[in-house]
Figure 1 (spheres, helix red, strand yellow):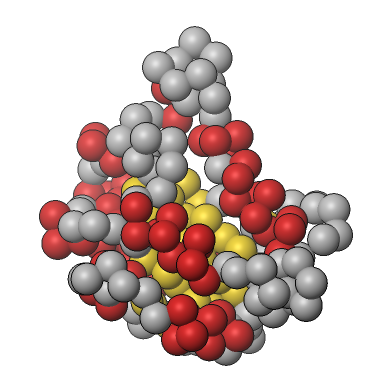
Figure 2: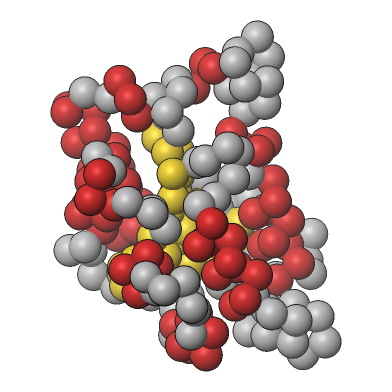
Length: 184
């Protein structure tokens, strides 16, 4: 069973209904380490060595975050910039992440139909997540099919519970839902 590092990045998890519920669904899953970046680094000073050790100790990396302005919350961007370093994650000698998998778990306020031609957002979320696929490619990681919760503002309790069950099953299965990438 692969060991999974779930990197949670929500600037106000206490006010979050969906990301908090997904995190709760992940907590009891065996071989999953839940790592809340905003709780770990309230001063926004990342311990790069600690984070790299965590990455080395796990086979699968899940980045869970709310999709803000077609991107990630600021601390997750900072984490990627400071932790996925040349010589560690990519470049000369940077093979530490090679063969590990990367899964994006994100939530959007808008419904799925609003992402794509004719919608308020002209591109599907999977297209807007392409920088993560490129990150997986350059680091030699396996990019898994993203787990996306759309329409969080109108999500009913039963729908949210179904997403929690799917997320828990996905984390527990350890089965990759992979996309084919060019080797880095």
